[in-house]
Image 1 (spheres, rainbow, N blue to C red):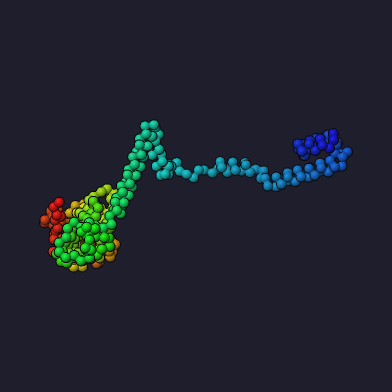
Image 2: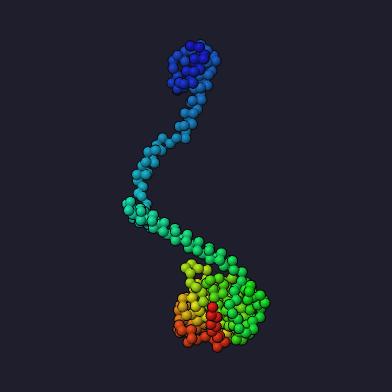
Length: 296
């Protein structure tokens, strides 16, 4: 055996059990003897390190501890597991029904979002309230108001008895009577006087807001009157529903058809009281005179 064969066999052999032929060759070759001794020392050191970090009974201890411990979870699954099990289809028919229902919900949500976006875009296309008719002296309007409309941010100051019919888009139509108010997009800031609103109801539509010193009146589709007089705001509802939020207490109430509510500087001062559905007999402020839209 030569030194090259010795090295090849030594690299492949287990140094803890060196073949006899390698020892015989190492006894006759000084360099191979040193190589064999170095290999044996390295292997011995690795074995010592393994024994130092290895727990002899680690596996047995883990298995014993796992067998002794009982599961902490109860037999009944949690509400999340029950919900998942409830909605998870178990048959082909149930799967079909589940996916059809999910598709209907997704389509309905998308349709609602698209409709809301379309209405917002429609409102953005209108940069002014359109003047339908006026009666009496109203300051604050430009001479071009009848042709170009009343721009957002315009403050109107109507003399007592002066009236105006205006509209925004296809949904918002309001009648102003003796008001001091600022017109905005889908909103009127009313300081005094009366506003009669006729808002077309559209599912998920953009709400209409009337802000007074005493309350915020939010409407999504109804006919109602808001009157600011003698330090209070009175809301008379004919059809639909409105949400009223007190400016001082931030308390919110919902007004239903044929009800009336008064809000003062300290909050709601009058409980809901019925009003007539007939516009001709509905109680309104003495300063308010119903305006009939002109015949077209």
